[in-house]
View 1: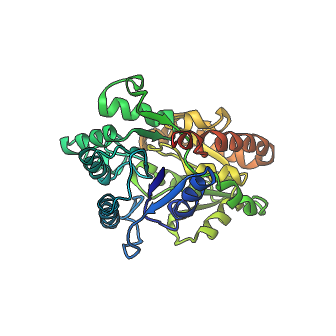
View 2: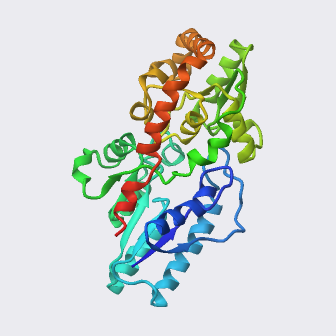
View 3: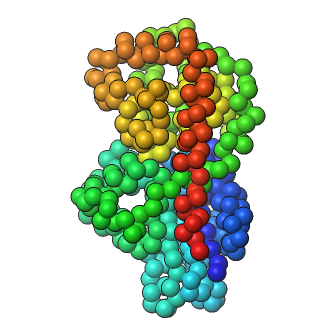
Length: 351
């Protein structure tokens, strides 16, 4: 049996750069013969503003992968019982693969990780394309072509099933798997940043996009000038510089309206930064009550203004009582590592 890994283009400031080596190594550690299907390296590296990737470049990359998959079939290198893992379920190659597998009578298993889609009204696809028939039918086609659809949180599964199908998740229990993302390396990567000297630094580690509500963070910084406030994407940070800021911060702040996992807040907990997050989205199932403020405080700009003083008070309290919160942060980090940032449930299905 061969495992064909259809990877994501590497953006060095994102986790996709680390997945280039970690995911194939993880599969090999579990005894699998792995063939990586990647794309060209000469695609635009800069992400489309506010997005996770470059909208043009990602299609150049994926189109090249589709060609390689076709060559593998025509060269007789794909056999019945092989597995294909797409690290991004929003990939047109899934349809191409299903087409070849079915028509050539070479039955393979298809695995794919869902990050976002039009079914999420706060995602780029949801905001700019919405419920257009072509995109909704495309996502449904991907879903049914995939044998194992992976989601990192229950929140994401429920949103997917309700917004795309208007149906409860149990109707798709044979196709959906809740698994942590393959990020077992994170604790080791950040270990050297954990003991950096802390300062009264509050970090906004998210993309600058409407659903992240950076304007709330900027307004709070004006109200509390005694602290240091940094929006990471205001600077061209290397991975090392970003991790250093995480290690030196006391609070990682979120007012997100969209989050199906939340990697940056997890990174913060690994270096003893207190997550300050709304009681909504994936955060509800991932983080202790001690770190979640009421959702309505940042549900909108108007709501934020009504609750601004309450947010200010909790920020000041968290800075002044930082040392007493470290034990809780570390306990939450351990739980996150075990349940949301380890891909054991995915690995079990590759057999």
